[in-house]
Amino acid sequence: MIIPLGDGAAVATSVAVWVLTSLAVGWLAVRWSDAALDRVGPVLRLRPWEDGGRFWVRRLRVLAWKDRIPEAGAFFAGGSAKRSIGRPTAQALRSFRRETVRAERVHWLLVASGPVHLLWCRPTVGAGMVAFGVLFDAPFIVVQRTNRGRIDRILDRREPDGGRGAS
Image (cartoon, rainbow, N blue to C red; front, side, top):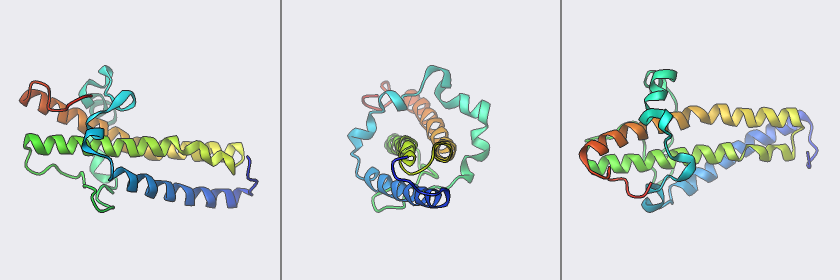
């Protein structure tokens, strides 16, 4: 703890930081280019054991609860809601896939920001804040990975390269 605060003030500060960080990352995310969203990189790349998102459907029953979590993709101008694809053209699927990448990156960045709370929280409170970040963001990450796997399977059936560009 670099900035000494009592537990109540530390928790209040952490709540404010979580909200501000979420807003800042969300605001930046709507400015990411399509080219940046076509590349998933090592963190977002679906792993073989995920079986194209089927693992999450089988083990966590994602399809039973995914529609109950909040959707904030359209909160900022230029953002896009992810509740439905609309008409599932190849272009709409590729666009929706980019939105799953954008959303997953946002939630991973929020998880990664968790340790900053250790600057003003004592270790046990800070660990609680990090745990909160992981537990809060994990369902959103799982839903995006599941959706992207489903979309990839559809695109793979329709287009030889899946229409995904560099992954």
